[in-house]
Length: 151
Image (cartoon, rainbow, N blue to C red):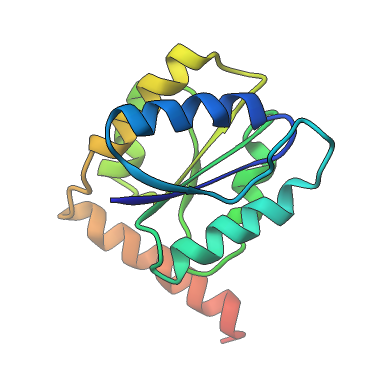
C-alpha cells in the first residue's frame, strides 16, 4: 500500500510521528509537506494529497492540521475523495468498513502521538465491507457526480 501524507504547520509534528509509525510497519509513503512549523495554508496540502489519491497514484492519504477539520473539508472538494476526520480507533475502523474512506484526517492539536499511531494502524488495517455499504457509497458518488458536473 502507498500512502500520501500532508500537513500544515499545526499538524507538522504529528505528521512526523505518523511517518515513524508507517516506516515501522513497512508502509510505503510520500510526504507532500509541509516540512516545518512555519505557517502555511492547509488547502494547499489537502489539494496535493487529495489529487494524488483521486488519481490513483496512492491508495490512501493522511492529512493533519490543527484540528483536522480544514483538511477534511478541503480534501472532500476533490472528486473521488472520501476524507474522514477521526480522533478515535472505533471511528477509524468504521470509516473504512462502512464509508471506504480513502483519506484520514486528524488534528495535531487535538490528539497525541500514541492515539494517532493507533488510529493510523486501525485505519490502514480495516477493509471496506461492501454489502449494504456499497449501495450507500454509490449514492454518495451520485451526489458527487450531480454537483461536480452540474447535472
